[in-house]
Image 1 (tube, rainbow, N blue to C red):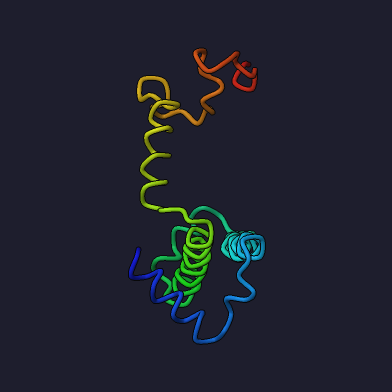
Image 2 (image 1 turned 120 degrees about the vertical axis):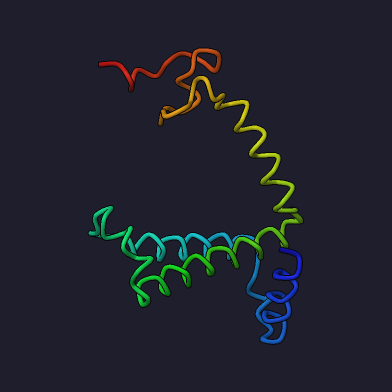
Length: 126
């Protein structure tokens, strides 16, 4: 990721775009790109979405939007001084504590619905 971030910063700096890359603007841009990724799913069934991998045009659009999201995330992390790899590993460890296998396996419940994290929300009650 470090080399990708360096290439991205070089690309940005050659165009003098750093002046626009405040933390706020980058977060807004990330969300706009995420919305473009989401737009690819609009009005499509799960089967249609699964078929994206076989459709070169649709797959390229999906790859491009994923890349845009990643690139903005790298810029946000660089701007905020965040080591994304470390942050991701730490978050994974936190999630492992919140979602123990014996309670979360095959379940879509949020960790707050597990008794040791608080009272059940009632969403899973019949």
